[in-house]
Length: 140
Image 1 (tube, rainbow, N blue to C red):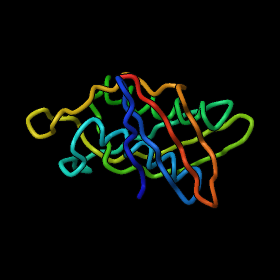
Image 2: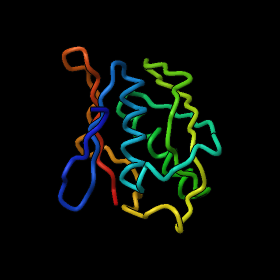
Image 3: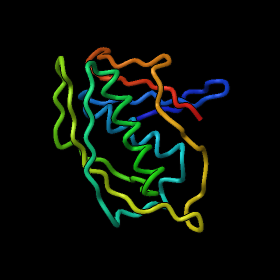
């Protein structure tokens, strides 16, 4: 399983998994998109590059997901697939990802949750028995 939805009273959350930390971040992004709409109806008609920085893995995850939220809110862009082009986990973490998707169309795309932002509440990024896990709660 690439991600699971966390049942949180009044909010929504995702726990994503990966063989690498970058893969867990990708799966967290896809999991977030699945909270917004039905992923099966998204087409890969456009792509965009997003970048994020953070002073920890947790802040990098929050900043990455909030950049995806910003692209959805300002440009209506919803992703179906994410490719991590650069992932540098260090004291000053950085990532660059290519997101493939299209403009949200309310006639074709079911609207599920309105995600306002990824939060630091109960955030966790860690390696557990050789698998990376990234857990995040969203403000809805």
